[in-house]
Image (cartoon, rainbow, N blue to C red):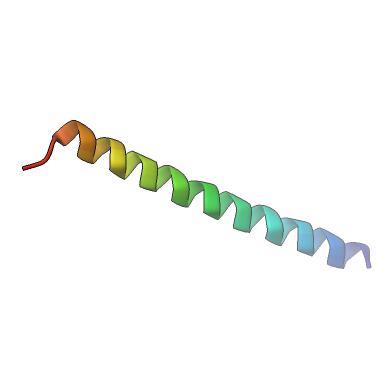
Length: 39
């Protein structure tokens, strides 16, 4: 039972980290576009 909980928590953390990384990359892209200016 304990192993299952650990696996679940680990999975949750991985998904959360992936989500945050996705948001960061999107924000970085937006900032880059804004700084580059529109053609």
